[in-house]
Amino acid sequence: MLHAEPEDRAPDPLAWLAPILWPDGRTRLVPAAADGRFGAASTAAVDVAAAVPGRRSGPMAAGWWGSPDGTAPRILIPAGAPGAARRAVRRYHDGFSPGRRLRSAAAEATMLVPGVAARALGRHRIRVEADPGATRGVVEWLGELLDEPDLLVAVSLSIPKSNRKPVLQLLTPGGICLGWAKVAWSPISEALVANEADWLDRPAVAPLITPRLLHDVELCGRRVVVASPVDVGRRPRRRPDAPPPPAILRAVAGRGSTGRVRLGESIWWHSVEAVRPNATDGEWTAIAATAVAAGDRRLEVGAWHGDLTPWNLMTTRRGVQLIDWELAADGAPVGFDLCHFHTQVATEMRGAGPAAALDRSARLSPQGLATLGIDPAERNLVWRLYLVELVRRSIALRAAGYPSERLTSGPAALDRLAAMARREARTTSTVATRAPSPQEVDR
Image (cartoon, rainbow, N blue to C red; front, top):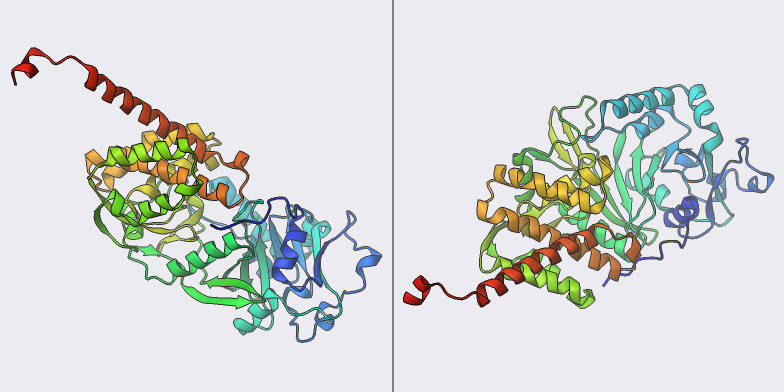
């Protein structure tokens, strides 16, 4: 079982990031003070390229701007090249509302004018400092790997969580995106990065477009996976909360082993059984009751993305692109992605709590499953098995060290599964104790 690093080991995102990108511990990320200046203690290692033999300048020369601020940034923007900065802030996906698209366009325009960008973000400057004897880190080796001596890197940082990892956008000074890199730093993040590499290396089934795997390497003791860039559509082509077309969901399923199998024979069910040693009695009782309800019915199975959401989709003139395959798995009941889409839209875009999000998914999923061609007798079972998947994830995360109080979807799904099991138990008890009718006696 994987074990995650403690959640609060490094609450400072810059202190967390620096040793991941520069594992020798001799390189730091230093934010500017409130007046935009660096203190006197920070002047010892200004010329980073000179301090580290063989280090290419890349983002070292000008450092980054932190947004929304320099002490708790969500993205680090290359500060030395307007073209790269503009590309770094360009964010378009299917979940963007018209207002967010306008804000993204305004951010791009700001980055193109150095004076305006400096006024907007100058107080949020972050510099890379290295002690004498420091060695090249992941960033510099990526420049070697891509044969780009002036490589610039924008860094996306998610909120602290067990599967958090730096995502690096690899840019030329002119703003050409060469690819995206994910850097593993812990056992759980390494497993996710490795899984993504596996799925990116598989061919996509039309009309689905996926990034290509460019590199899967170890740099400075870190596993680094580099994926090809994807197109970003500036014009919305679907409603932000609209699920992907059935053809896309079918194309995702087609990336794995398709067919009809009994639940106990499916690859996905084996992953459920794998967490049994870490499950509570209540969790496993609810899961086992669902297996009994499935009986010997054969279900249609295939691959599922695992996090198919509007922010992982980009619908462009070329087609529908789907990114972030680190949670993908094979042999799952077809329809999981649709159920998860509705749950995540309710949670992340509508601010619904876990129970309300599952209510929304329960209402919307049956019609979507019908458009996928799922047999009417199987639709409720597919959604119920999706609840099992949420519980399975919750058990696995808890076993990996994820704080139990942060697990919300899993407990909400467990409550629903337990309620279903109780209703079925009452029905069975009623049928078993009911006195037979005269007609039944005659038969």
